Image (tube, rainbow, N blue to C red):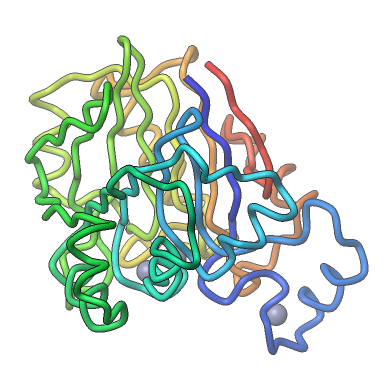
Length: 274
Ligand SMILES: [Zn+2]
Ligand SMILES: [Zn+2]
Ligand SMILES: [Zn+2]
């Protein structure tokens, strides 16, 4: 399997669009891996996770190719993860030679936002199809088995993260979550899936959180818990991702700190094969 990270920042991006803090100023100067756009990843070449406002930029700059992508998993409705206005572009005359239905999986808030912000009802019927993603109810997507898991994040909606399996390999992609809530831990305990790649939230970097997001210490605790449950080991790729300037660590410092806990640090354009 392959996971490509296209956007690795929290909601404001890094540098933040309107931010004048020293970390954003330094990121603008240093560029490279210090430039982080909003959250998006692709499993192999055909399963997209989240649709941020930076999607077009990911196509232009990092080579994200949506020609054969017909399936989108949405974690939650926050604007850095779901920008439904772009889905208007699936229809004629904006998109030609696109015969397949575009499948979107998300919670009820994502559905509401989709219907409020993409107005063309004909298009909704002919070009995309929405599926309710419910925690702990598996979804068959092409040859993937996708398990939506419950996140600890915005209490106004049922925020999700995803376990994605194909041909005996499994990714756990867990962002915009604090410490995994009890129902998720119970599910993971009962199912005993071995993870080949675990991507954990690290929004607050140097600061501990655990309630809406994770910092590095929170991610390390979650890693330890998964290992204790027998769900990951030293063959697992452990990655931290989704960073905010408020966490205070530019790429090199983040990588130095993450290495102490056996994590790789994501950057925009990073490809991980396993
Ligand atoms: Zn986010
Ligand atoms: Zn800033
Ligand atoms: Zn969020």
